[in-house]
Length: 125
Image (cartoon, rainbow, N blue to C red; front, top):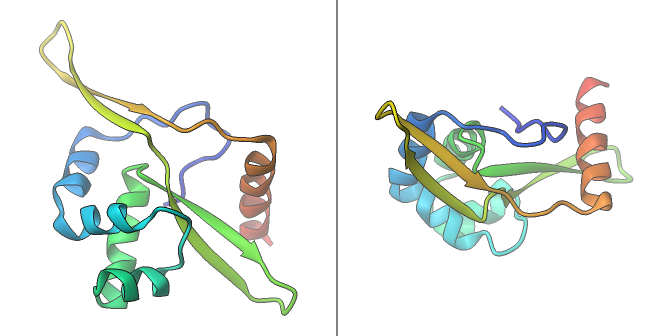
């Protein structure tokens, strides 16, 4: 699942987010993502099989920890790159003793928002 680039802020499910952060492979991916990378690049850098990388990327995208960026290439093929979609994750104990997740997101430039919008449009084509 791709995080909605049009939403002001996505509120992830606590269990999904904690499950992704608990996973050692997901934490390895986070450490490697200093800049956007493809699944193949991550597989090589993390020394994790490509099939496993795709599962972990899906898990992390569902938990709103990653953004998927689609690069449109001149040859008609598209490349998906993944980048970290958070600066900070906090668990908050609410008055009713439930847990809430508070995720700080990096500011998006106009160019990044346009790229996100194009990515969503290209999926519909």
